[in-house]
Length: 427
Image (cartoon, rainbow, N blue to C red; front, side):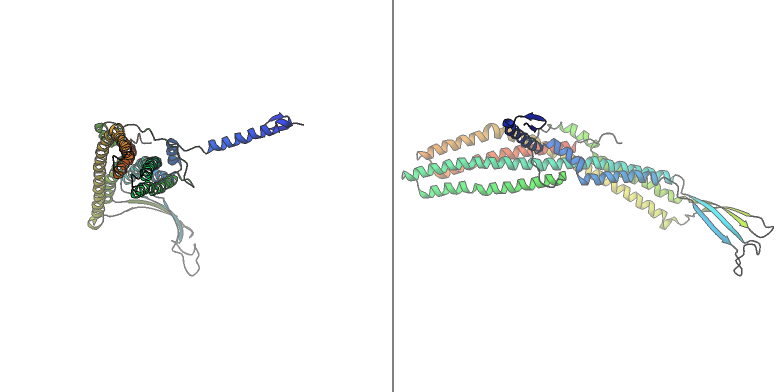
């Protein structure tokens, strides 16, 4: 008798081993499927599954369809009627001029108005497409912020746990001196208090990390917070300040604001077409049923008369001009704000890079050496416990500052990457 496992025949004695191998393979597959999520994969998920971006995509589709529809002539009108029908008999052949008629009419808006409205809707669709690109870049920035905050919280927690070990050394040193009658019980209690108070900092960081992971789950449209890869992203260093400012003209959100300005300017031209009349052409055919009477054909042209423009056309044009100016002011304001953000983030990036290097190379190593020397001096009675606790806190402060510099440096790079994102060619 042989046992079949995963497509192979094995003797009964080997059945258990093969079964165990199958279980291990299943477990390894399950572990692989639950692998931590990388930032690159998370960005792809966000751009593909975020419902906010999906809504903007449908807005683009809507406006493109509208751009086609608004440029078309109004639907023609079909008119069916009965004329001069006698009420005593309702007979169509009792007298002359009783007839049935059918008519067709078509309205033609002011010359060029439809083309301008189609052009305006098309520019608005371009603005929506640029808004989609800009919102996509902004969503990636929001994801990177939450991601970096979560990484910082995790590393800061590990740093504080390491600090607990240093504090434990202080506690042991205080206990040794107390047992040898060279130290006081108060020193032991203060050392224990300094160690135990770090638990509150750990709890706070754990809560912050849970909040960051919840935000990541919201951005990715996931039912629960994901397990993220513990690896600091290698974001590209920013370009020069001059290049960054030059690339602002291609920033999708600025392009969208610029397109809205163009659409509003076309709206002024549309409003000016209101000074021209609309034309309606109609043709009617009537059939007379009285013996010997001819049929009838009627044709006519109907014109609107914009002869009192003060309260209508003038007001429409003035309102359209105000909309165009408002759109231009919004674009100018947004452009100035982005220039300020680029300059501020670039200066911040340079400063953070210098501070991180100084902390790595000088401040943190010096603080650690100072703590070791102070603890050694305290162990032989040549330093106070307060000096030990102070140098311990300095080590923790510089270690956390280093992590903050690293986080903020990556955040500045992400901000600059968003601000210098270029929308590319419009579809």
